[in-house]
Length: 445
Ligand code: MV4
Image 1 (tube, rainbow, N blue to C red):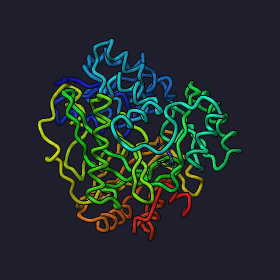
Image 2 (tube, rainbow, N blue to C red; image 1 turned 90 degrees about the vertical axis):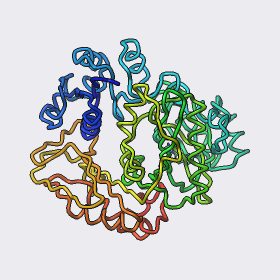
Image 3 (spheres, helix red, strand yellow; image 1 turned 180 degrees about the vertical axis):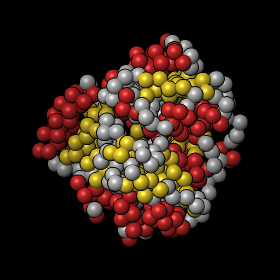
């Protein structure tokens, strides 16, 4: 097992990883930027190393500085959390060259799954359904038009190097496809340095369902059931839950076993999330693999009882998972609300500043993952998520009721947060009945 881990991240996930390390008897050293120098979790860590100014390019994204910090701390592994360098292949390669274990995806799988067109082929090879579309890259606009004619409009053009909703163009007819194709290629070039695009039939009003996977280095791949993340706005998730309320046990098993097959086909190890779209008829289609621990992992921890960060660290250290799929049981419903420092009345623009009054909710089935506290100043340089409120109760309706109670108790003043927005969503008749899809927030709020 590792004796010391360097945490190459900040905020709530840095604290979450510190906690997991300490429970495993591992020392945790955290890096920080000048903007984070007063954060209280720096004192909870066994060491804290300043790696530069607030600008992420000069600190949390600066590979040389992070590797230097790992050398200074004498860490034997780096946990990248989510975002920042968590799926950066160059960083993973340098860690390997420096004999530091990267607690993230294996290099080979990053290549294979990082190219979305290649990942689509991999899914097909693993006998997992994909949306009708191109076999690999579409090279010319004429090929795109021909293919769209065969599969039918609407279609969506996606950047091969894209993901998470970036570099996509929707087309309802040939004219918009001809425009969108070139626009998508230019945007892909600028954003990802790769002009390659592929084509898919556009699924109207889908749900976003994802399967949590953990794989050890001995080739054992297990699923920890699914999360429904349909409640999102502009590709930013706001509320996640498990189980997906519209799946029956048979469909759920089919979905989770499909996710396992893709991960096995990629010879992947570590934590992964396999994303699917679910259409109105409850057909599921593979979208992409997220090769990191995700923000919403606590939802899965609550319904399965597993500590996914601990498990991720153990499998990275080469430990085998000494349990079977049948030992992973799903119980009750968990919902997570993301609390962002944002002003919903002002187009959800970031709302940094000092927290003068802070009262955290509690009670049965209530968990808060956060690094903030009364007197903390939310810096303006980073993602606006400051807390995650997770509730776990026996039924979905009880979970919603407890979440409403907990959101009502939560005081974060005077900065604006997404607490009122989450309350409004949870009160909505269509959310309560779970008649939602990825367009729900844009349509109703
Ligand atoms: C789609 C789609 C409809 N049809 N692909 C956006 C994020 C990326 N992972 C995939 N995305 C989508 N791909 C086809 N063929 C609709 C979306 C989509 C979406 C997906 C998941 C969650 C929110 C979304 C919001 C808008 C569009």
